[in-house]
Length: 202
Image 1 (tube, rainbow, N blue to C red):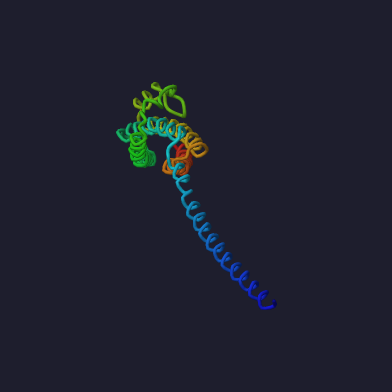
Image 2 (image 1 turned 90 degrees about the horizontal axis):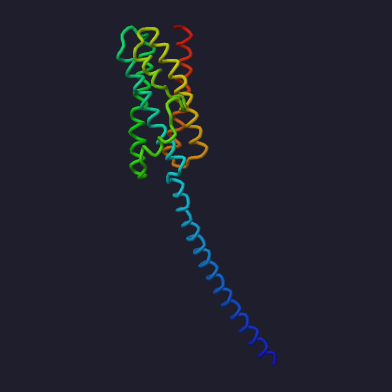
């Protein structure tokens, strides 16, 4: 009787160990499956690299904004008798913003967005842009007058661009657009300081 009890106990113990081993294997298998499924959650992050409406608005509004800044810079660079600090700044602005226009135009092509889609309701004078009469006055001015008009107009222009860039940082999600928005804020904030310094000494 005792021998039979020991035998039954041994058999039960062996069965328990086998079941335990199966359970452990199942747990390990499940754990592997969980890890695999967890790692596949990364595509969610990739969706944030797609442009949203704010990114599209940023590019379609900033392109003509930059284009006008380059036009203003060209006006100053074509004039004689302008303070070299102003012409140097105009060249700096042109060198920075012309490539950014190409970059943003490429984004719109990639996104299948028309530049015209961002121009509805965008009147000259919004976002610091110069209206036609101000552009004509700058074009007609010479020397110190031209320098002053350029600096005063570009100050408002930069402030408008910074506002647009801050909106992009708040609402956009396309990484390259967010990076460009930060560059606009950093670069143009520094240029605002430079322009104010020059205006004080003209």
